[in-house]
Structures are given as C-alpha cells and as structure tokens.
Length: 295
Length: 195
View (cartoon, rainbow over the protein chains, first blue to last red):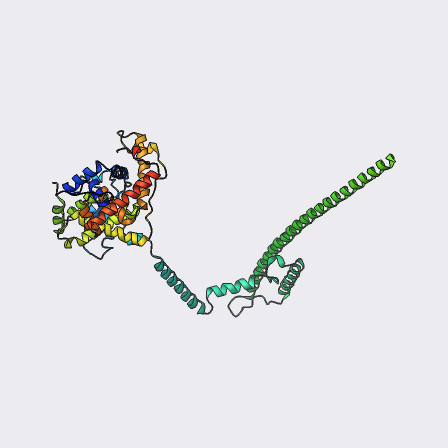
C-alpha cells in the first residue's frame, strides 16, 4: 500500500523524525523530502532541537531511598532509627521511605554518583512547615490561654505582682510632671528638708528602752530597724539628688553652649552686614571724590 | 542474581522488602530525572520521587502486572507531578546555574571531555532548561518522556491519557518552540556539538 505525504502534515513528520512510522509512510515521506526543500529544512531544525535537548542533565541528587520496617533488625543493618516508623499513612507494618546509611549493594548505571548518606527525611511530617491556617489557629489558642491565665491570676487578691507594684509606688519619689527631668532643685531641697525633719522627729521621740512591741520585737530593735531604713532612704535620696543635680548641670551646660553658639553666629552676621555697609559707603565716597576731581 | 522487575515485584508482593528496595535502587534515578525535568525544582523532584515509591509500595498489593512496573511507576510519578503543578499554579521555575567554575568542573569530570567542551555543554544545558520551562506542561512532559525516557508514542499516549495524534502534535509544537528559543539564544544548528 502506498501513501502520500503533504507539506504541513506535522504529525507524520514527527513520526518520521522519531522513526515510528509504517514502512509505507516512511517511503512516502522519503520521496517527498527528496523534492521539498522546506520539509528538509523543517526536519533539520527539529533534529537540531533534539540534539540540543541531549545536553540537558538534571543536577545530581542524593537519593538512596529505602523502605524500612520498624524492626530491631533494621537497626543492626544501619537503617535509620525505627522511632520514625509509621508516621505517615498509618500503616503499622510500613515505616516509610528512608535513606540508607550505607549501601553495599551493586548499583546500576542510573545510580552512578550516588553518595551514601543518611536521608534527611523529606517525608517526615514534623519536618515540614505547618500551613498558615494551622499556625493562625495555634497562635489564637496560645493567645486565648494566656488571656485566661491572666484573668485568673489577676482575680487573686494580694498576689505578688500587685504587692510589688505597691512597693514600687511608695518607694518612688513624687514626680509632679511625670518625668525625672521635670523636678526642680527647689522641690528637691524641700524634699530633703522634709525628710530630715521627719528623721529628727523620729530620733527625738520618746522610746522606752526594753519595751516589747505586740509583734514580739523589742522597741529598741524596732527603732534600730527604723533608723536603718531611714539611713538607707537618706542615702538613696542623696544618690538621687546627686544624679539629678548632675543632670541639671549637664542640661545647663549644653544650653549655655547652644546659646553661645547662637550668639556667635548672630555677631558674625552683624559683622558681615556692617562690613558690607562700610565697603559700600567707602566705594560711594571714592566715587564722589573721583567725580568732584574731574569737575 | 539479576532479577527482572517482574521478579522483584512478585517477591515484594510476597513480603520481601529487600526486593522492593532493589526496585527503588533501579528506578529512583529515572523517576527523579523525570520529576526534575517536568517540574523543574530539585528539592520538589526529590519529594515527588520519594512519594512515588511510597505510594507504589502501599499500592503494591493492588498491582496485578497488567502494565510494566516501570510504566506504573511513571504513571504515579506523573500524577504527582501534575498535582504539584496544580498546586503551584504557575510555570515551573528552573534553577539556572549561577556560573561555571572550570576548576570544579574539571574536578568532577574525568579527563575525557575538555574543560571548554564541558563549559559549552553546561551553558547549552542551561539554555535548554530555560527553553523547556517555557513550554506548557503537557508539551514538556511529552518531550521528556520521549527524549529522555525513550517511550513510544503509544506509551506516552497511555500515560497522558490522550490520543496518539495529540502526542505527536504536542511533540511537534514543543520542539518548534524549543527550536525558536534556542535559535534566539544563538544556538544555531551549526554550533551544536554532539556530546
């Protein structure tokens, strides 16, 4: 049976290109190609593309997959630990595809370049990133749990954070403007004077030596503790005062430097203006003198 | 002893795990190469390759041997590739080599091929990879199966679930696009070296 081939029959051309056509079809295309330059060029171009495709090789990958069972013998053979068994698919008999630590078996040509190494466990579910929705749900749950704990913790009266907050409030000096730099020297001096007066009052107060307080502590001990506390407070106040004073001095110095710089700039501008005016007047005088001499 | 695929499949179905591992050893490179050429990403190709064997192992009791084991494996791999492409919803990106280091190339290859030829082949490989990434998935898959896995038109048609003529059309169209892209990049037929 003879067949005919017409230009533009691409499917037949592809069959001819890959040599997967009937002998009669091949003969027909052979006969046509002998006369048709366009088909010859088309076939040459397709062959060229095929030839260039041969250069594309995928990158070397370390595969060495292996199916292992969760059985002690697999440990002895060097397969990966069986604790990862059955994590996918729920098949208790099947572990999963794993990498092999060493592969003594002969390899075929496709397996050349294989490097024995422990497979990194691509299929392990916990190694994969969680989807966004799961992360969002987890975040909400954590937030809700934290909120619930906070509510429960806050409802307990006299809990530790509240107490420490009260201590901090009483220990902190009054700050009228809300910031340490807003305290003036006068206020600090007043504070110091008030504290000294209180301390003097405490010292001069009548205390019966040896008396016992209702809590079982003698009044002498109590007085000693109070004095200690007062001394500590005084030291703290002095340190704070020194810090504040240093701060004020620094602020004053920086402001003074700024003012001096501003004054110097202003003087320079004034001098520049004055000099320019003097130059203009001098030029005017020279001009007038030249004009008067000409006349 | 050199077992055939059918022998190893039969032994695997009988519970011999080592036989299935031999099948993996035999076919993991071709399956990885197929996955890489279809989806264009090395790590994902590894994933697909691994998942292919995992699914094959689980489905082994249902494999009755109507088709060749390799065809069955290719079908699983192509289905996974198709799923991956659907998930990605974009043209697969290919990892082009950032540069060619002649010393590295000389170290990894034997003295048979000169460094110049090796560099030229690497460059050509990058251009081909880029051109393949431009093709629609079905054309790229058809070319990969035909050119790199030596399948017949009928086998490709069976795997892709399309008529024979469609496979030929896909091959023709894909090769035409490749040819144009390669010519545009200065890869004319005269410059082609047989490697």
